[in-house]
Length: 229
Ligand SMILES: [Zn+2]
Image 1: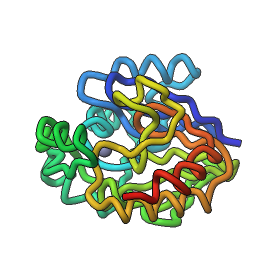
Image 2: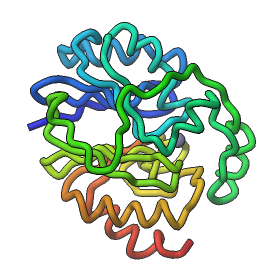
Image 3: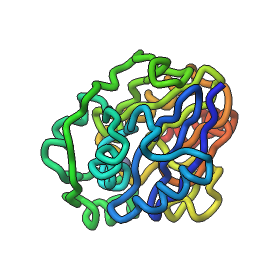
């Protein structure tokens, strides 16, 4: 059984997942490394014990400390090849806003740079994580970015990144309510990914901002509000 420990960097969530070995999913924004190290230590994990640093997608608030933490851990870095163009560029690139607030934020946060590195492992759809100590697999869930993935545990829980988000104000208000993320490269594709996630999971869904969100709540949201766009 693998256990998900939410870490709380400033602007996004990162997660320590502990099974037979620990892995880190996402690394926060630049400057969050100390918080991530402390969060891991609180769960009894040292950075050098990490078996893998896996990314739900390549954006500055999820990849901000990867280079430093991977150097300290000496472990492989993984992300989906669909996000390789973002990684090669080393900035968020243009962001497509969802709704008015998303369009305003997209102007502010587009092209934010971050330190980047190549993937040692391609986190492609269906890749099992057992060799890294985690009973679970990668599910390709594009839409927020082309290479967005979810980490689906055999327990029925999942870390789904920014496919949707929890609540409003970046997750500060009503964090367990499903909501559209501010940005989606391709919103219909993101919504199709929500359907794939619902089919592949049965329990709590951990998101990049706010959360966790109950499976049932996402199902209800998708059946009503989520279909309007
Ligand atoms: Zn993102």
